[in-house]
Amino acid sequence: MKTERITDDIARAAEIIKRGGLAAVPTETVYGLAGNGLDAAAVERIYEVKGRPAWKPLSLMVPGPEAFEKYGRDVTRGAYVLAERFWPGPLTIVVEAADGIPDIVLAGGHTVGLRCPDSEKTQALLRACGLPLAAPSANPSGQPSPKTAEQVAAYFDGAIDAIIDSGPCTLGTESTIVDLSVSPYRVLRQGALPAGEIRRVLAQSVYLVGITGGTGTGKTTALRSAEAQGMLAIDADVVYHDLCESCTPMLEEIDARFPGAVEGGMLQRKKLGAVVFSDPAALADLSGITYRYVVDAIDGLLARHAAAGGTAAAIDAINLIGTPLEKRLNATVAVTAPEQERIARLVAREGISEEYARLRIQAQKPDSFYEQNCTHIVRNDGSREEYRRACDKLFHDILEAI
Image 1 (cartoon, one colour):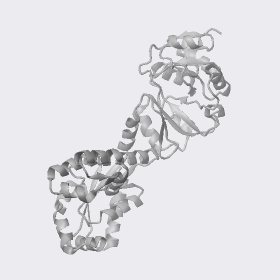
Image 2 (cartoon, rainbow, N blue to C red; image 1 turned 90 degrees about the vertical axis):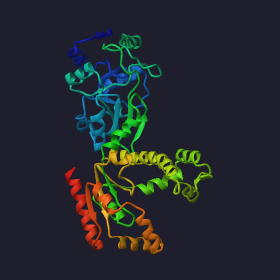
Image 3 (cartoon, rainbow, N blue to C red; image 1 turned 60 degrees about the horizontal axis):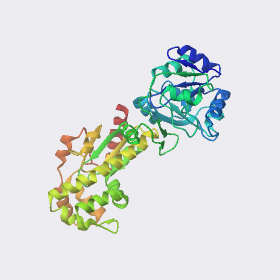
Image 4 (cartoon, rainbow, N blue to C red; image 1 turned 135 degrees about the horizontal axis):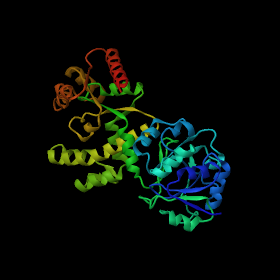
């Protein structure tokens, strides 16, 4: 067989693909060995030429996100979010496979990876042939992936029909593979696109509402209302306490700054409190350490929510205004309540004296602070049922406006 070297005749390359032939194609990462992804015989030939194990599935090259509707099933919003940001580019997105994709592509599984390459010539080929391309890297299994047409020819000259020459690949590293068919999502292969970028984009795609206000105002009830409306509910205090139990890097940073604050892997809260609550500079240092980890943990929750199709979340925290997290919020809800009612709730909830409850409340920001700095206000100054209805209406209206 004579292997053609093609530079500009994309129509010729499309003809080869449509009749079941194989062509090496350029991408921004490495050259791929491409055939008609809907032709089982062509795909079988890819396996044979590469010496690829039959148990390893193949991904499909596609021209854009519209391919999710053709080749995917039950595709979540998270897949579209990532495709919008990173396609064309070095990201393969795994989704549930639609009917009609040959079993040999899926290697007996039920998912398929879709990849939109950042190459003008390969994009032109995809449009010209109107087919998805099964296209693993154009190298014999176990050998280095080729970054030039010459390297492909050294492997497969005479064994494949054509090589589309587009010069050296710009990245030279395979695509990152992220599986969105499972929850939580998984990065199956770390390639040219950092996993942290995937996480950041997913997290930032979620519409985030902050719920804030003083102790005893009723923020938890508001959070539960948001959750009932379909929003992801995040309690910042719970996130922090979970980190105190499980986040070794955070505890190590705290112990380095405040020696003796961590004993046997456990945070000694009273000992630490005795230091930081009487020293504003020490408290600022502690907040600087913990805030980074709390925000990172919240990002993880948001990213998983987005990957599963979630669009909105609410976070309950006293300290939102003026913090780095405030910049991430799309809306803020101030929850206010009369002081005497807050005192009664604290006494009943925590078993403390009225005097101590009053001191705690008076040490915090006044309601006016939250009212002046939030986009929405809900007042908890009537019956429980009235307050719940007010919360339900507020979060319903917020979601309707997204």
